[in-house]
Length: 211
Image 1 (cartoon, rainbow, N blue to C red):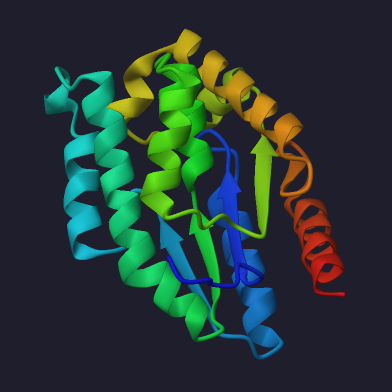
Image 2: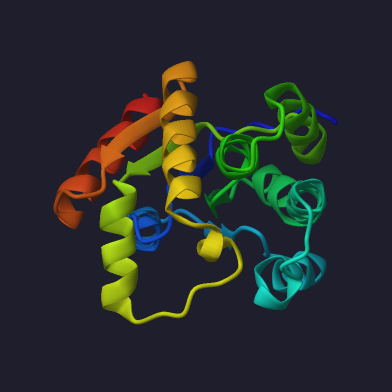
């Protein structure tokens, strides 16, 4: 892959109901108000092909899906997104904010499903052609708190969300390990804090990287 600058590429990570969507919109608003062009992407999804893969992955009817089928589908959707959207946008100096990226695969399919870490790393690297975000914002939340927020929302669970409490405990541990292993890229934020406080910390991190 030709060199593409990642200085305008940010990702948000965390288990569901950690507040990623809220913080993504706040960051988008901040950047747009100062005159930047911004494009928000979700994973899996973001392109016609990736959205079709998303439907397969989240459909509860696909309960027989194997762990390796799952990781390859997530990675296929991501490769399409990187090639079709992320790289062209970064070349145009557009800020790209991704709602999930390779860390999700490491946490969910690696730690959660138990796929060997070396295999996960190789699949991740191939899928994104080596392109990583400049900063990743990990919204840390206890799985119990996540379950409570989900319950309060009344939203039905998809296939992945029905994986069970033990699964999400492993995913949370995976995210903690990722943050520890990548201190230059990953910024850990307390998802239980006030949304304005979290947003202000994110802006501080973004501005410090631009100096």
